[in-house]
Amino acid sequence: MDRPELVGRASEYCRRAGLELGPQLGYGVHGTVFTALGQSGPDGSAVKVHESERFYRRERDVYRRLADEGVHSVLDFRVPRILGCDDDLWVIEMTVVSPPFVLDFAGAYLDEPPDYPEDVLAEWDQEKREQFGERWPTVQAILRRLQGFGVFLADVTPNNIQFAE
Image 1 (tube, rainbow, N blue to C red):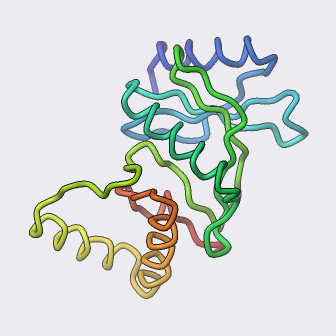
Image 2 (image 1 turned 45 degrees about the vertical axis):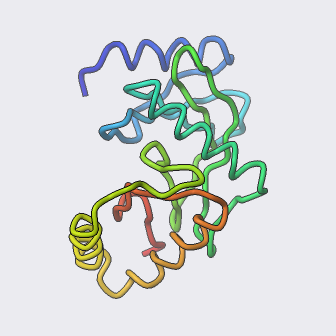
Image 3 (image 1 turned 30 degrees about the vertical axis):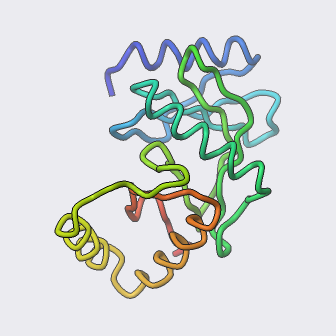
């Protein structure tokens, strides 16, 4: 990943928070995730720096909603907890989770599902059935539980909903 502006914003967040920016954990269309070492404990935390303010605000608001609801897991799938954020740098600091987990809420919608045409939804459903195979019913149950909190997850992949094995 050669995105100096993202690394710069993540580094600035860490500097302000008294953390040390660590290695990259992952990246996607909405942003890049790094480890951060410091006051969060021996395992550190993760900082996600977002590509755009829109997706930063979406993800921040979902994490805040889940925190307000006391959600740390959904059907035994861990959910990162928000530890801090910066509205100017578009950075969210969160706990690090290990599988099984649900994460990456930048593409999620709060309180109302996305308004996709029926044919798009049918194609999406078929794609997800193929991606998750026999685990698809569990994923659907996770999605329904999140919807109970007003969170409509659109970016559903085996990277974002990861099973223990």
